[in-house]
Figure 1: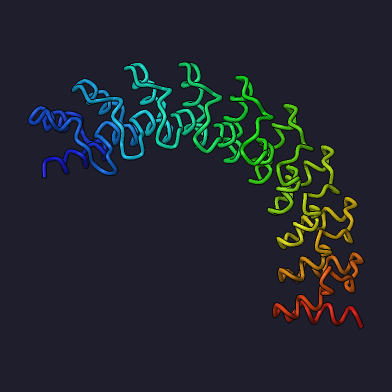
Figure 2: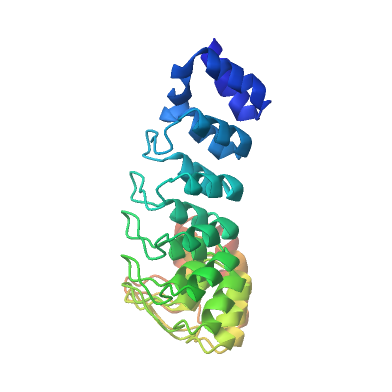
Amino acid sequence: MKRKLLRAWIAQGCDESLIRALLDDDKTQVDMKVDDGQTLLSVASEKGHADIVKLLIEKEADIEARDKYGQTPLYWAAGRGHEGVVKLLVEKGADIKARNKDGQTPLYWAAGRGHDDVVKLLIKKGADIKARGKDGQMLLFRAAGGGHENVVKLLVEKGADIEARDEDGQTLLFRAAGGGHKNVVKLLVEKGANIKARDEDGQTPLYWAAERGHEGVVKLLVEKGADIKARNKYGQTLLFRAAGGGHKNVVKLLVEKGADIEVKDEYGRTPVFRAAEMGHGGVVKLLVEKGADIEARDKYGQTPLSVAAGRGYEHIAKLLHHKSE
């Protein structure tokens, strides 16, 4: 009962004197483990209770104790953005280069969650900005993918490689573009990121933004000179993927910028075919109005009308039938 009370008081940030009294009553409790193997110090660090963290350290709590995920109190403080607790733990000797079971450092956690003040502090204390997790991801990728502009800017200014690639051959710009993070995309482009880079599937950052429907990012990259006619290794264009995703505004933008509406992929499918196949009536209507050939056949002899009818998209089938008359 006393242990549950102690854990609850620490989590809630109760008066330090109450916690001190319980610890003085039973000194073995200081390193007891609770949820997921967390120690009381990890709980206090996660919640950002600096005074309690200081008390537990005074009571000789293990600052390197790990939970079931291999995370120390410093991980929890860094991941939650508690700069004061991070500073206190580091000053008391916490290992800033420790890795959890996924090979991630406290800096990795802070960067991935956008805690720029903690990132700045850990870098100042010697944390490795090039460290990767077991999945091969650099912390800069996590920051870019999360849209954390200030962290990305800080890491780039500290020398992080903006052209580094992950296991899929993608750079930071891919992550930012695919996540729809326009400000991060703009920052990376201004820092010289290659907008024409291709991943292992032959896709560009613009491709990722288009297929996910991020109109603002698509517009920005096109204005910066990205190739709207680029194809991936399957012969699919940006327009094809945007049409397949039902992203009408992106489709409209690409067509207005000169994208070819009749380009076929390796199966002979055009953008209007793909939109019909996926049930996106609004995109089908737009492409038809822009002059798309509704009689074009894929390598199996199917037309947009036949594939829409076969999949039960009656509204699209009616539209295409009406246009073919």
